[in-house]
Image 1 (cartoon, rainbow, N blue to C red):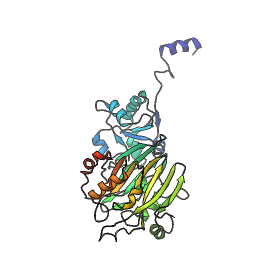
Image 2: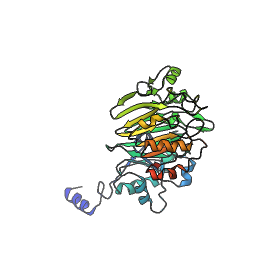
Image 3: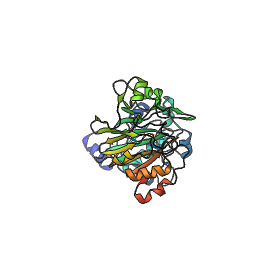
Image 4: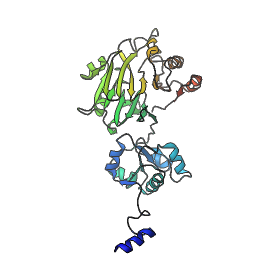
Length: 354
């Protein structure tokens, strides 16, 4: 093709490499898609129907059906345009369409070639569980994601780092598949009770020379390793990540044997300026008055082991977190907490721990 013909074709928008034929998103295979998803800073989008999604999906995916009216508007409301998006469907066709639509709105999009069919063919894991995810932004603009896994088990993803709180693989009929999760950079264990301390789960999440386990002395003695913190200790784990160990215990008469004073830890994690209080098993103890400037708090609620709803309300009013997650609540009815704390300006979010 001579230069004159090429120029004319270019002006008419014809031929390979023109703006009309340029793809504004990336297609990748299963291996590359899995690597992208495991980074932790990517928004995973499943654009199949709700019925297809319920039959099995990639863990942590958000489901927005591309065939339903207003797909683009709903996606723009649910997703952050400043964060990359990884999209898939059954075979890759619907997701390619979705990728193109989102790319036109300024999203950085990667599409899974072959869809979930290719994913399963490579024996990659799927789930029927819908894990609730809450996303926050630190004062410096970094993303922190909280995953409600089970009971007192919390997964935190911050700046590409994997943080696990009290990982336990099985409680009764409930399970968490830690084998298919990324290895942890940090694991925090509050105390040795079986609903908080699981040697097998810790082993699944641990990678040699990578994972750092922080716990109380009892658990470190039982494991034979671990970095021990006692109430009042503070530690810098990495740039932008610090931790404080705070008291967690029972004081109600007849309950003190469950969590004796001085044995167990709660933790305050500071992630790039975002302060997160994970209370562990405790009642509304006097030491909570010393916990200041908390952005996010996880407070337990099930007597006789932790707090009543009344104690939790009292603790929240003392700590004054911006956002409160009741957790470890079992069969306790916590549905009244958002109303009780509304006047205090506390955003209470009740998550359903499987």
